[in-house]
Length: 128
Image (cartoon, rainbow, N blue to C red; front, side):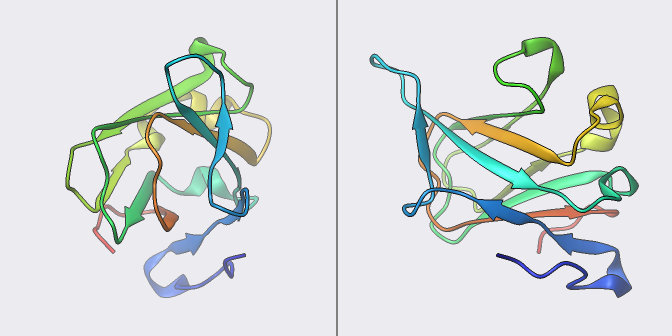
């Protein structure tokens, strides 16, 4: 569990991750692999504009969907990571869904395993 208020001077907060022991919860079936992570954001999450993901091991060509209710495409914020990059994210503050969700527990769905993920929200864009 990450500490909240980690870097108040720059307006960044770590978020609490609730995930399986290996870091990924497999969902779906068939030939398409999908994974899900439950994320608990701070109560003031809408004060932040950027969602940043980092992996020391890098990303594959990965597609992400952030939502409050499972598998509802009208309620998703989507973004992707390029292969062999270590940081990705999205300007969630530009999406109406970010402000419409009435919960701070959100779900991040993605299509490739992410090793040792770190997730942050930030008021300013940067690569931590």
